[in-house]
Amino acid sequence: MKDTAKHQGLRNQLVKQLQEKGIKDKNVLDAIGKIPRHLFLNSSFEDYAYQDKAFPIDAGQTISQPYTVGFQTELLEVKKGNKILEIGTGSGYQTAVLCTLGAVVYTIERQNELFKKTSLLLPKLGIRPKHISFGDGYKGLPNYAPFDGIIVTAGAPEIPKALMSQLKIGGKLVIPVGDEVQVMTLIIRKGETEFVKHEFGDFRFVPLLENKN
Image (tube, rainbow, N blue to C red; front, top):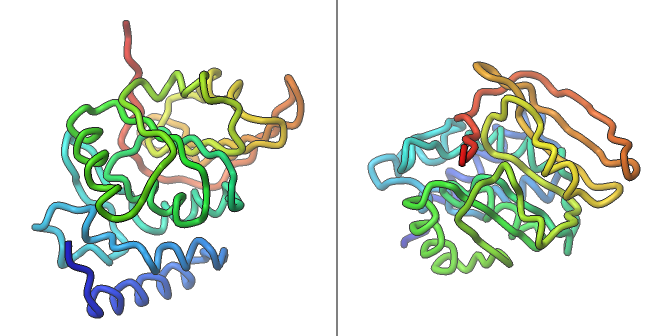
């Protein structure tokens, strides 16, 4: 579990790159500058960890491109103490960014292999989400709702109603919507039944799978 000055130098370069690509939120950039992304990847990818690219992780999933992590997190406008639900824990990298921003993070992962691995990894790195669970992200975590923000890290064919209902009034849902290519979508809950939708261009994600039982 080494994190060296060389790794920090590579992170600083990555942060510069993300700024050039348009990520402006200083807190988000600072978090990405602090988190040892190489420790979230299989060691064969360690040398590439600070390139702005997605990489395969276990269970046929990917660790998102840092730009995408930055973009989604910026849209969420996380404030310290915000209660955030993350759908798709994956490698735990996005979880680490949210925790570093001071969010109280509830995260859910449907791939058991990833759930087990990440549950062990995060505490070793000093990253402590409030709750990490194994289950179906489509359903969210109704027992812990409502949330200030919900972030979905896989492409969804449509916006799950369950997630919209788990937002606080004023809360934000950031979700990539679509089949082959996803449109990054921000939903803001304005009232009991009133939601406002904003769209922010095309991204590519692994699909968000639903348990069909």
